[in-house]
Image 1: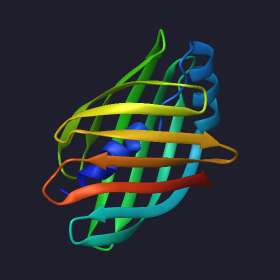
Image 2: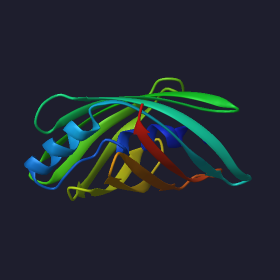
Image 3: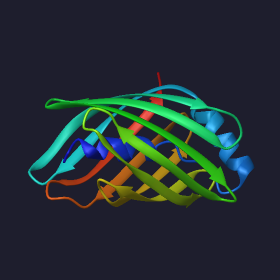
Image 4: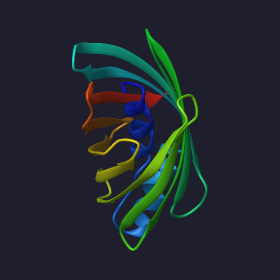
Amino acid sequence: MAARWITVLAAAAVMGGVESASASELFKRLDGSWKGSGVVRLEGGNERISCRGYYNARGGASLSIALRCAAPSYRIEMRSNVTESDGRITGRWEERTFNAEGSLSGRATATSVNLAISGVITGSMTIAVGGAGHQVNLTASGPRFRGVSISLTRG
């Protein structure tokens, strides 16, 4: 269960603005390599995580991402593709290590996003983009997983 949060985290980390121009601008800001760390909140306590992200702004309102994260007890490899149209963000995610997949949808401003996540897990996510990085906070339902917070910067 704890591993599934990374899939959702990475998918949501790529979301952009309400207007096409805002999404395009934000996707361009995310383009490239990122690294970060954070905390995953589990039923039995918290665990530190580290991540590397690779974003590819494929023009206008589309973005692809590959994210690899590690904690002491597991590894995650996630891929996602998202698009923005008329202010709505939609996309698909897959986590290759645990063979999980699902969809995401939501609305955003030029600096933050609120998402609903569905598939193997359900939950919600907020993302705040500013300065040289972005902060992702996720809450999900599950017997063991409670949420995650991660900060990513260029690297």
